[in-house]
Image 1 (cartoon, rainbow, N blue to C red):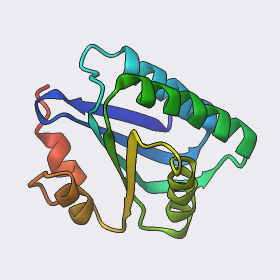
Image 2: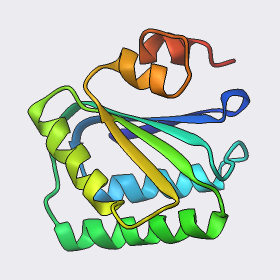
Image 3: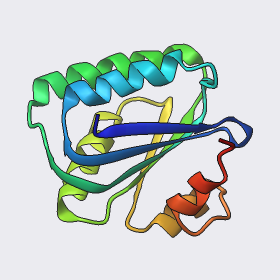
Length: 140
């Protein structure tokens, strides 16, 4: 699946990484797996790495339905979540803009887009300079 997630519970952070073609069903599957994971916690900050997306599914109705389901979960949690998208290419910037627009009326989500990993990590209070270095801290 071209979407992976890594939970760093001690940091209150989940890292989501996209690779290749971003399909809506893959995002939905990853989201459901994340929610079912024992280290999931409402309010975790999210770092969404879109730097390796090469294309994306342009079914806007299905995308908005997916985002509606996610928004409902965020609102029900009673927590506010910071979601930082890393978008360094035109394709990843298009996808992240779609996500940002979908959160416009959802107070439970604070979405931001950054054009470098270092800036995104700093916004999330992480000292690492790259996502790979951050992920290397995961206990195997």
